[in-house]
Image (cartoon, rainbow, N blue to C red; front, side, top):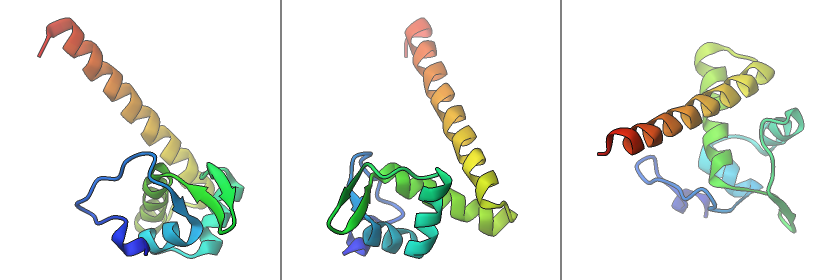
Length: 107
């Protein structure tokens, strides 16, 4: 059952597999909404199985972020997709900076 996959305090492994129903249940969204995100290019299934598209935990984070952007800020789907990409890019750059700082200055 999707509810047992994760809680807000429990970190997900990046490769944790989710089918469409589990993703929807975990994130509290409809399958139609998720499919719209796939069609918009915001989510990318890693595979397709008997139960439809399969996603990783990265998709859970993206769905939650898009949902918050739309709900809290009224951002449309395309804008939310762009924002998610930029947020992820900033996080990647921050990780790189931390790694370089630790190599240069040692922790």
